[in-house]
Length: 182
Image 1: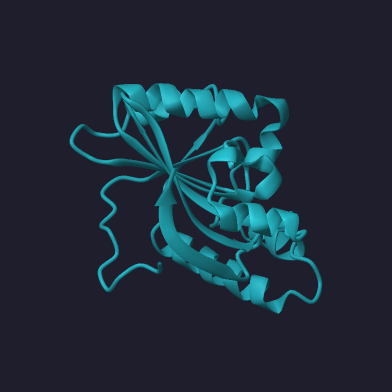
Image 2 (image 1 turned 120 degrees about the vertical axis):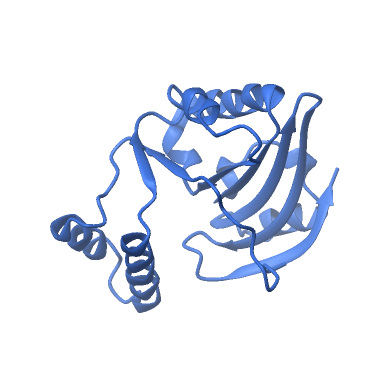
């Protein structure tokens, strides 16, 4: 399910992070580079390419909490624009606040439709009971260290999940599936 020839146009973007890294700060980016495990040349290449892209067109980054500051950030998206929240292997870092993050997103979706694309470790995803058989088969086969890609549409009428893919949790591989909702 890779993007087609014309990826969607992004009219507004903002990041939210408790401790963002300034991509223009050489020491900070060296620390990021040093944090990649030895022998992971592919991840180093991806990191360097991402840093280059971010330097060329830096996004606005807000220092804040993923739960406490999320509602105001979402409310600041200009009217008339679609809202897409992406999370990438961050749910586990929320610990016992994971449900509060999901609740905040779902509450915001009741006021304005939100597409949430989550890429996270299997054990961090909620609603696995709504997942298609291929997710359960992966878990049963011991693929608990892999990540899942899920698109959740959050609206005034509730939440609809579509499980899209399974992949390595550093993005080193991805196995796209046909979108399914349940």
